View (cartoon, rainbow, N blue to C red):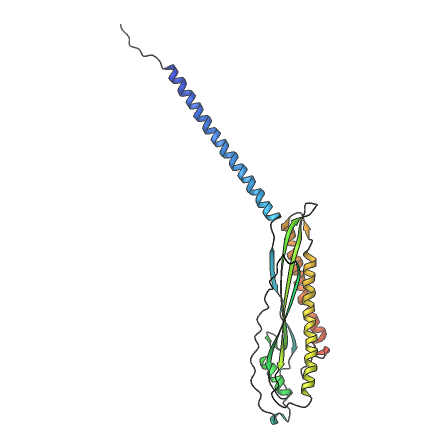
Length: 279
């Protein structure tokens, strides 16, 4: 019996196995390379994020306005003098607008404390005490507490920069603080003969009112100095801790600013004990 047979392709089989091993090796090498690349990228991302947070977390900027500090509550009722009818009817006044103070432009290129004062005046008219009181009541600054002769507002803003000190701690290396104060005063525009002695009394009143208002201004300025001195040089293991501490310090000083001005008004009876009494 005759048998047909075919030779076994041993060499081709060996080549096939070798090719499979090469392909498998390439696939394994590719996945190892991909894994290592992802790992390296992740480590670099974490590193640069930490560097950004801890060394380049600069120009941290904040802003806060103070509560209004109204002065000199004008009596809600006045008695018309017997001779008031002998004077002309005064011009009408316009209600003074008292928008919030605005933050100053500050920069870490000019570190330190920047202070600014804006004096504003609202016009009143009259020929006697009755006229002046009526117009201050009608057109002076208004708050939820009532009508006032004068008003002081302030706006604080601050910014700071982080760096690492010699101990490897994050620290506030540079800071800038701004305080913008706005004060509103009455301005009596005299347009004729007035009640005897009234102009001298008014001038004395205004001089004392300025003294009282500048007392508020100085308290705001002092708080701005304290903000600067309190946050400059703050240190902690991380910049996040420094930032949190700085915010707490400033919040406490903002509250101190408010209570200090409230106490000042209580001590001076809104300037009355300083002679700032509306004629």
